[in-house]
Amino acid sequence: MADLRLKPVYATDPALVDAPLTDVPNQWAPAKGIHLYHFPLSLDSQKVRQGLEELGVKWHSHVILLPLQQQFSPSYVRINSRCVVPTLVIDGNVSTDTINILNTLASRFGPTNKCFETSEEEGACVNDWVDRAADLFIEALTYGEIEGVKKPFPIGGASQGGSYHQKKVELLSGLIETYKNDPTLRAAYEKKRAVIEATQGAMVTAGQIPAIISATKAELVELQTQLQTGPFNKGGWLASDTFSLADIQWGAVLYRLRWLGLQPLLWEEDSIISAYAEKLFARDSFQKGVVQWSKVGRKVVLPAIRYKLLKAIGLKRDL
Image (tube, rainbow, N blue to C red; front, side, top):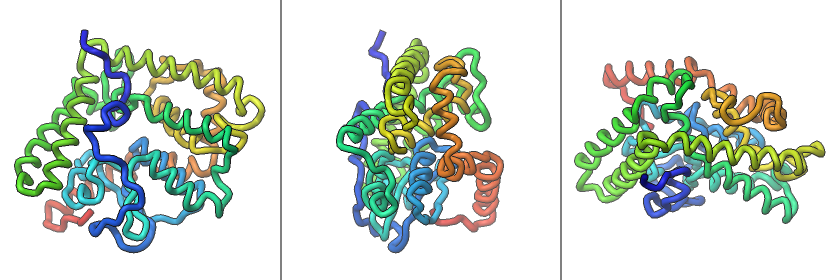
């Protein structure tokens, strides 16, 4: 059997993707204000939106409709060559990659609002648990077929033998041909196609999904131990006495796993993990940054219908 891929491509194959940007000027980005390009149901978008809410930062929303493949629009790719969400823009300067974006926001706005303050010892623990959350192969769990689990709308229809990712591969192949004379766009599309092909392989190769579930469960056992022995058991949070970036990472992860119907496979309902999750979900910033954006009909279906209608009558919006 080939080596099992248990982590996302972004964590294991950095050569396939462009390095994260931090506050880099971009002529294609909005020149003034704080802007977030995001998708309502995107796990990483959820994390950044909660971070913005936690910090009390006012921001302009630019929804990128992933089901309509707007992340591959040339105008968006010129801002984020990774062809992913989220992307943060502050006064024309672009930051990419979720961990990088949250660190940028915490450094810039945290001291003023006294958010995400930790001791040096706590900081090392926070970073460890941030990395652990990012290393979970959530995309494979989201779109891979898992026996006995019925995925929620709109994920369910896309979890069929890797067909969702195969359509992306075909779309990107067409874009590579269309923009073959544009080095920037061609390179971005080629790299993204390689990432998607690697991810698709992890979802359709025999034995991959069960192995990913086992690896995820093992990590959640470690999470349970940390909750039992760390600050949470004394009234604090996951990795520190105060709410930290590690809690933002894991709140979105646990919410996603529960939404996917995977909780019974991964942790006991009456465990300390569930108690931690409920404490996270009750936080005001989580309600505003995650829950309120998770209304599929209003936040995804209606905007998609509106976009299609505008496109049909020739009023295509600029991203």
